[in-house]
Amino acid sequence: MMKAVVLTKPTKGEDVVLSEFDIPEVRPGWVLVKVKAFGMNHSEAILREFEIENDYIQKPIIPGIECVGEIDDPSDSGLVKGQKVVALMGGMGRSFNGSYAEYALLPSHHVFPVESKLSWTDMAAIPETYFTAWGSLFQCLRLTPQDVLLVRGSTCALGYVAIQLAKALGCKVIGTTHRESKINLLSGAGCDEWILDNGSLRGKVHGVTKALELIGIKTVQDTMMSVEQGAIVCNTGVLGKVYEWNHFDPIKDIPNGVCLTGFYSNYPSTRIIQDIFDFIDAHDLKPLVGAVYDFKDIRDACIALDGGKVNGKIIVRMD
Ligand SMILES: NC(=O)c1ccc[n+]([C@@H]2O[C@H](COP(=O)([O-])OP(=O)(O)OC[C@H]3O[C@@H](n4cnc5c(N)ncnc54)[C@H](OP(=O)(O)O)[C@@H]3O)[C@@H](O)[C@H]2O)c1
Image (cartoon, rainbow, N blue to C red; front, side):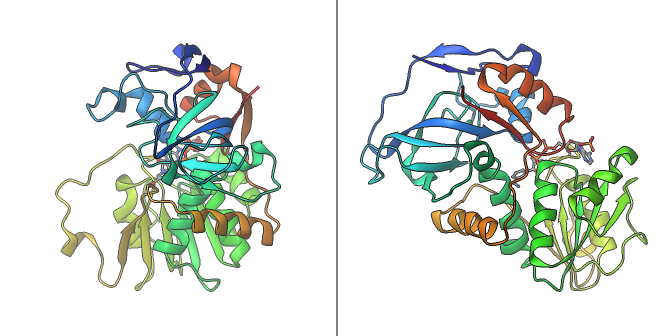
C-alpha cells in the first residue's frame, strides 16, 4: 500500500487527508514512478474546487499534474530502474491518477528522463511552471532580447518564472499586480517596471512588444489595447476566473496589427524539457521555490495553495 490524496467530490484544502491506496500495477505503455517531490498548481485547486464534478474527471482521482522522481518499474519503456524523470500533464491527475501519492503509474510518453544535479525540491519547481513559461515565451511569443515583455498578473509562480527567464535572455520586463502590497515583490523578482493593475493598463505601459496574459479573458482585450502595433499577446493564465470568451468578435476585439495566441502545456517533449534544464544550468538560475511542505502536511500545502498566500511555487517533498 502507499499513501495518497484520493478525491471523489469537491474538497476544500482543510478537508484534504492522506489515505492508504494500492500501489498501482505496471502495464505495457505505462511506467511506475517513485515520486520524490511535486510542485502544486492553480489548476489543482480548480480541480478540487469544482472541476472534479465534470464527467471527464476519473473518480476517485489522485490529483497532481506533475512530479519528479525515479523509475521504479520501467515496464516496456526502455527506461531503467532508478532513472531520474520528470512527468507532467497529458491527463495526469484528471483522466488518470496523478502525483499526490508515493507512487504514480504514468504513460511512458509523458515521462521524460532528465540529467540534472539539482535537489529533488529544486527540480520539482521546474516541470509544469518552467515548461509553461518556456512555451509561452519562446514558442508563442517568440521572445528575443530586444523585446519589452509585459507579464500581466506576475505575482503567481508562473509569472515569477517568466520574469526570471526573460531577464536571463536580456529583455526589459514590466510586471503587474492587483495588490499594492506586492509591488515590492516585482522589483525583487527582477522587473524593470511595475504597475498596480486596476483593470486597465491603457496609457500606463509603453513600448510593449510581447505580452504574457496570466489573468486571462477578464483582461486580455485591455492588454491587446495596451501593446504596440505588431506586438504578440499570449493568453496562458486564468487567474481572473473567466474561462470562456463569449461573443468574441476577432474583427473588432483584436486591434489591427496585434497578434493573439494561447499556450496549452499539454504537449511537453523530452527535447524541450532537457532544453529548459540546460538553460537553467547555462544561465546559473536557481529554480524559483515559494514554499516547501512535507507530504504528511499535504493538507497545509493545499490550504496555502487555495489561499494564494505563497509567493511562488509550492513544493511538496516525500518524507
Ligand atoms: N495554459 C496553460 O497550459 C497553463 C499552465 C500552467 C498554469 N496556467 C495558469 O497560469 C496561472 C498561474 O498559475 P500558477 O500555478 O503559477 O498560479 P499560482 O502561483 O497558484 O497563483 C496564485 C497567485 O496568483 C495571484 N492572483 C490570483 N488571482 C489574481 C488576479 N485576479 N489578478 C492578479 N493576480 C492574481 C495571487 O496573488 P494575489 O492575488 O495576492 O496577487 C496568488 O498568489 C493560472 O491561471 C493557471 O491556471 C496555465
